Amino acid sequence: MRNKSVVNEAREIQIAVDLINLGARLQLLQEETNLSRERLLKLYKEVKGESPSKGMLPYSTDWFMSWLPNIHSSLFMGIHQFLVKNANVSGVEALIKSYRLYLEQAEVGEDEPTLSITRAWFLIRFFEAGMMQLTRCKECGGHFVVHTNELCDEYSCGICRPPSRAGKTRKAAQLAAAMA
Ligand SMILES: [Zn+2]
Picture 1: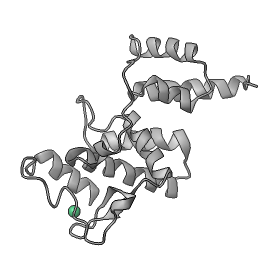
Picture 2: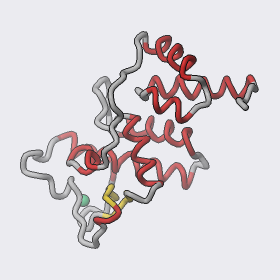
Picture 3: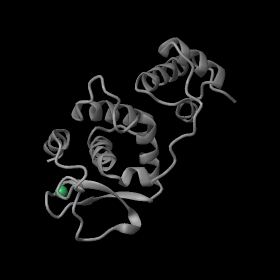
């Protein structure tokens, strides 16, 4: 039976609006609230002024392993794990709070963030499923996202060992400073 409490419903609408403002896809809203698809669609159009994208969700774990996405994902997961451990938050609340902090730390500004909130949500699920975890870089001591089956003691991160094509960009240097 659906929960008809007005307070609960108001809370769920607030969560949905927060998620929409942070760029969440419709499927994420359906998973994280008990609001009907019709209400979520209406809400989405009201907040964004347009219908949600209908494309495929980004399911792959490989994306998180490529160079810049890995740095951003590691920054996000570090924040998320810190908040869950120290700020007594969990679930969708932890997702929203850590994603906001990630946007601040990564100094995204008006640009499209490298890590979307939908990917951040998947990333948390991959961690919960034990498919991915953080490991320590032996050079800088920062913690980075790796596949669980690829764990090793001799890990060097993408900031310490950037691929030649990536170079040491200003953005990467800023992120490295933020993670130290
Ligand atoms: Zn490193």
